[in-house]
Amino acid sequence: MHVNGEPVDALVPPRLNLADFLREHLKLTGTHVGCEHGVCGACTVRVDGDIVRSCLMLAVQAQGTSIETIEGLSDSGEVADLQAAFRQRNALQCGYCTPAMLMTAQDLLKQSPAPDRDAIREHLSGNYCRCTGYQAIVDAVETTARARLERSS
Ligand code: FES
Ligand code: FES
Figure 1: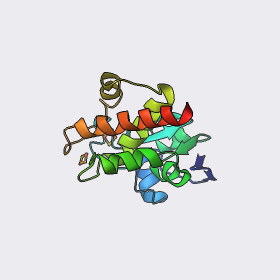
Figure 2 (figure 1 turned 180 degrees about the horizontal axis):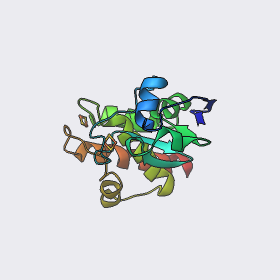
Figure 3 (figure 1 turned 90 degrees about the vertical axis):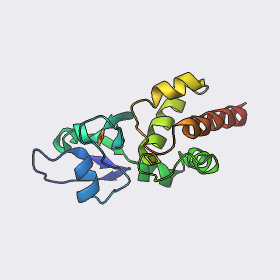
Figure 4 (figure 1 turned 180 degrees about the vertical axis):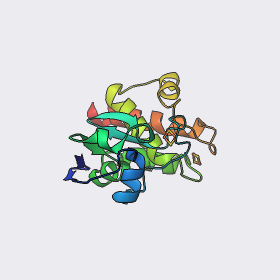
């Protein structure tokens, strides 16, 4: 597989999930693990361009794929404006949900450059945040969407 653009070749136990592989074998600890049951969304990564819950995918199923984690998106600058908006809007407190929230928000903005607040809430509804009450997160995503549209016009 490739992870954040780098080739990765590993032999893993058949039951190791992708989240644990990324965290424990590759030390990419920006992928968080909350529920381990596909509920909280904290483990969201991109696999071949689509966001997936990496706790629900076996590492062996990722053979031949291209994986992107929050470290890759952060290093490339792809989510720099979203990160800044989250900071400015106080859209994080403990930060546990934040990497996955950023990945999911970026996924939305790639599909839909001008989402309304309901669409933002709907797209982020699989990502749980126990701290913020979501209002500031929706604000940050909405602000970023508007700024991107202004820059592109
Ligand atoms: Fe994967 Fe919660 S840890 S969805
Ligand atoms: Fe704490 Fe979202 S900021 S869980």
